Image (cartoon, rainbow over all chains, first blue to last red; front, side, top):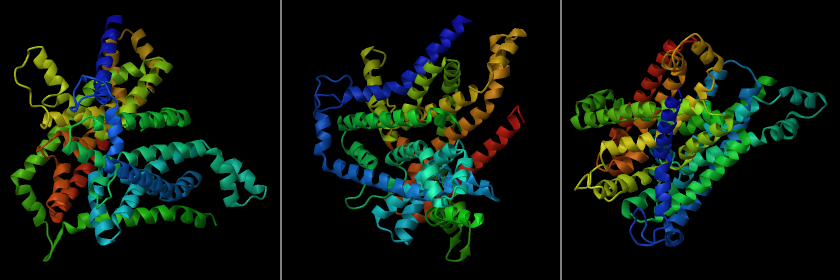
Length: 262
Length: 273
């Protein structure tokens, strides 16, 4: 019996080596002192980290990505919080259909969604690339916002809200003073999950590049196609730090159940 | 009174999604069925006669199938091990699983270019040990795409399975053992059947995800096209919007088909009925 567990433990260890090893290897290559990306590096330096800040297109794209992800997030919140509230608070006919409708952007392949956006939002609707990026990212963030906030609203006791109303508070006033403060950690978690989803997105953004407009992951792809130096390794390390930080916060706010429940 | 509030709360989101997602998607699908002479499925007929496209479609399906099978074979035992750990250790293992899941797919695919490239880690190691003389051509092949996709989706299936296995009651397992069932019997007669719903959901996520993934095949596949890179190539490089729309529609159709087949399967197999 013990034998079998040891075998299973070893197997799991190998699986995790496969999962995390590659990330470790590129992290090590980011400290290369020479000009060519190799593992292990010959001499150590931080010059490729410096190089990130010398590549103009990375700086511009980083700003674009931050603006699109934050702006889209805000719009997704304005649309999603009322919807999540309505879906959790009231029972009505067609509720499950509307629920499914709001989650549907996840079910359509991203690379298809991006093409449809390009053809109709940029093409037919004539929105500028920047605005189309913003709208497209809002669409893909909305399901995450609604799902996470709905799940945090299911833990909310709506009788508190009724009590506040019976004491004379207005509907809107109650929402802002009673409901919102109670689900603020859910909202923060939703914002962070949606932000990562948008910031890392390739499938939509890959269609929406124009003169001087492109998101950060798309610039990374373009860079990899042209140069094979450790700059991308250095960027990867920075991105992994951001990811780890976000994951830590979400775990604090919601626990790990968000990730294991499906 | 209540009704009015309800619409007011739901309407902005519904309108936004309708205008910016539903209409573009429906128009994309719709245009593939119309030519100047009205309704026609000629576009599709031409498509399925095209050897090149059929090959891409089959390659993509094969790659997705292999990815799904490998993910199950690697993920199931690992998930079982994790689900049996004590709370604190389990949390750490889950964090280590979720971390790659949240990491940029560009970063993850790039890491494999460093590992399986011509001068990559694997080739250097094998040549250093004298096992091969010429570097292996792994990068830019379907195998490279499969490796990248397994790396991309393995955490997803592990996390999904841990979620399901946690709910299998320990008492049930103890009861089975105390009634004389061997460990293998417990595993095959209790744990596997009860994990089926998670296995089905996990497989859908992996298969559909692999079928539609863009970044990994774009970076690791080289000239080897899969359906998503074929769609992008037609839309952007070749400006063949009609072809791209047909490919997009086929991708939606296959996705919907797989999800409904697997959902039907899940309902049939679910031991709880």
